[in-house]
Length: 293
Length: 248
Ligand SMILES: Nc1ncnc2c1ncn2[C@@H]1O[C@H](COP(=O)(O)OP(=O)(O)OP(=O)(O)O)[C@@H](O)[C@H]1O
Ligand SMILES: [Mg+2]
Image (cartoon, rainbow over all chains, first blue to last red; front, side):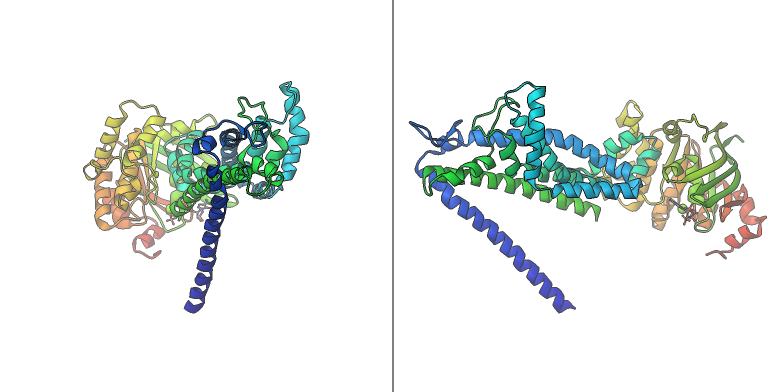
């Protein structure tokens, strides 16, 4: 018995080790190419340059900012939409719908199914349905813009946010709620002041992991953002993100050129952001589990 | 002697199970009334009928009336929030909020829009005989307190919002003898200001703390009277058996 236990944890440890090694390897791989861009341009020309124009007539610009700004803008917009909606849905699910077991299970099933949706399908929805709608409502020349991307990304990160928030809200012990009701506190106040703060770790984890999902999304963003490498100043302008620039340009650039290295450096930035966000998100998810146990 | 709470032909069902059977009971004001009976006989349910916490359990049905100060709390137009502010409750297992000691008490005060929160928190802690033990750690998590301290914190939380009635559901079941003694001392002190209803398994405890005593069996109220009378001359055979420890 003890032998098998040791054997299994040995295997688990081995794979965990392998995964960590792989992640380090990928980072090194990205860095080994990415850092070479600084043989051609200065740090300042990469990190602080507001222009991305790798095939300019006189001068090539490899500025991080338009790409980073695009990612930041679209992801933030997505979270602004998805977080309140996600938390509200999670509350509704765990506090109301749970009483009707079949409907609760059905809804959760649909949400999980939606999480596994291929992103190209959701992108298609943005391209074919949302774009004309946005174009018409705001009388724009094109509906492929930051707003469209934000809505699509919100849709894509909602399942993560709802699932994690719901799990954590429904684990708030009934005794806390009873204690609050017994003080003559309304359901609304109890949810706001007792349930949500108690479920805080899980909610933060949900938001961060939702963010992690959103910032790495590529295919759907390619389809709905309009792909113009400018620093967008409004929700109705097209833009680029870290992911879409890499996806669009990597295929058409020659190996070992400054352009090639610059794309790798974008990859490094993306990797670091999502690594950190996921790390913090998982930390909060772990914390949530510890509190409950 | 003024009657504070009065059950009148009160019955309660969870689904198809009748839990309380035609209860008639008059609980006097500013006294301690103990509710005794074997496990599962409906003591907790009876207690939770007084602040309508049973409403939270799906599929609950009631019939009959419960009066507090001559107002039937099962009337359609009764405000549950006002009722529960007036009827404080302390649960079987201590259940402080996962907040600081201070916040645990301030929460109810803020919701009910009391002023001078800080003074009131201090006063509630003093009244609950807890202040001296926690006064230097008011902003530490209440979850770090011992079981007995947590239970007194729950009492402080309940009395802070100035209820008239306090319901205690086996408040000592998770406590050691010293903590229990402190709690009983506290109950004794509180009955000067509040009407107290306490559920207990423990006959000695009932004898020590209560002025009146009700004995329940399988959802029925078998006997009610002054504690000394019930313990010395039980009228019903079932009460006698219980007092002799025949129900375990
Ligand atoms: N939430 C509930 N749903 C359905 N039935 C319940 C519920 N709570 C209690 N009951 C049933 O009601 C009956 C009385 O329960 P109650 O908790 O009032 O007993 P009690 O006298 O307090 O017992 P104990 O001394 O063990 O605490 C029991 O048969 C119990 O199974
Ligand atoms: Mg009970």
